[in-house]
Image (tube, rainbow, N blue to C red; front, top):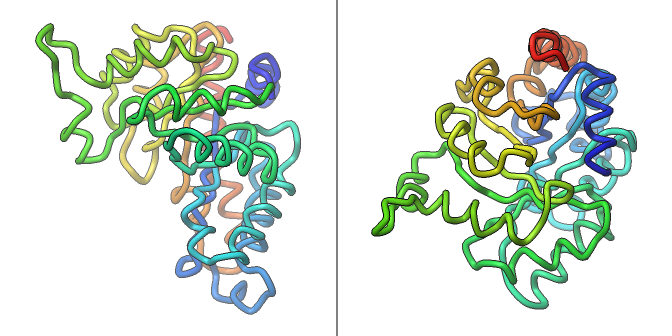
Length: 272
């Protein structure tokens, strides 16, 4: 999916919502466990209920690959089922070099045919650039995260008092463009979103942490907005586990709709 196509979907749906498909067999409704493929059956119902309210889906690959070949099959079926006008993110956080990186790119962009994949930048350019060899595909680079361990490295400053996450941003924007490179920026560090936006004013951000993790949608929009919206805000648990009963899909749809309505108001206030 191109940047222009993504922006058009945001305009049409009045939404910049990404639904995270972190599908846990211990949390899905028990009756689905009796089906041949519980992961896919759950995802299928969630997609049917939420597809009118979101512009992206983000399956977390760990929730699938832990089940071996059957899990990979469920992931493939899920990505194939998502409508083609909705942006897909393989949340895999890969980050290796050489042929390993080439084959990761082949896995996610050829076999799974995802629109994008999340990448850890620690090993530098040769762990990232192979993913740019696929036209129309995106790298989503970890930039500033919200987890407790982010303090271990991301805020370490050099002799000029420049934090590591800022150095990653300034270097990585040399590898791609705002047409094929996004950044992960955690929602629970709202001011940090503003700092990242100063360094990469035109790129899209994938923002996890809104909803169950406590991030504020309004703060994300205030700090992270650019002229093209520039935001994909992810909600996982707050939507897909809105209910564990037979009405789970209906409740997921209502939860997604609630967020979408808030996003529509924000888009209107920004004259977008």
